[in-house]
Length: 187
Image 1 (cartoon, rainbow, N blue to C red):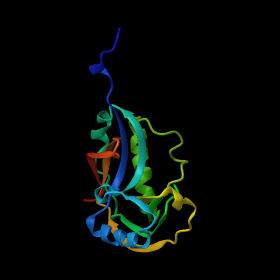
Image 2: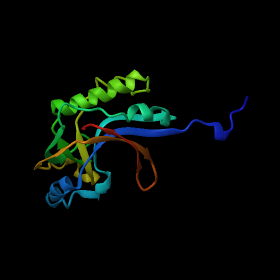
Image 3: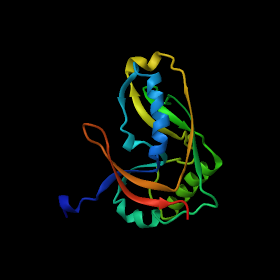
Image 4: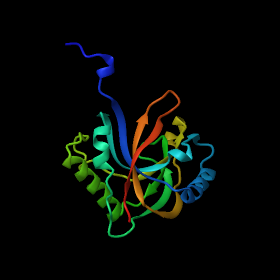
């Protein structure tokens, strides 16, 4: 029996992230003054986030949403502390690095455990993947890949009150993000 196009499963790129409050964007934005000749494109501030886990392409992600967005109360309000701005692991990106604190890693582990509990398909070896929490803030010119760039200290922090489930749709002008749901982390 042929499946009609209308019956095709809805596939969506999904990730879970902490939103960055506007109070933090000013401190990060100061770093751009250190790298003007290297920046090809600044990531729009409204797209800045700290990814907790990348789920990749999911079929019918809505089926997981109600279970995933249940509150995940913490004993105390998790603090996310930025350390510096510098070249990313991908050398053509500029990142604001986040301290991989015990509370941040614990939230990530709890999310992965929650996803596994209802058999959400996860990327292989998700627990073994190196997790470097960061905010992708700009793309650098490719010729800057071989240039040594100094890090810029950015000692700023914010309280993580919620995580967001975000759908990412690629377009020719860059990905479009849609917040599909929120996971409360505090009372």
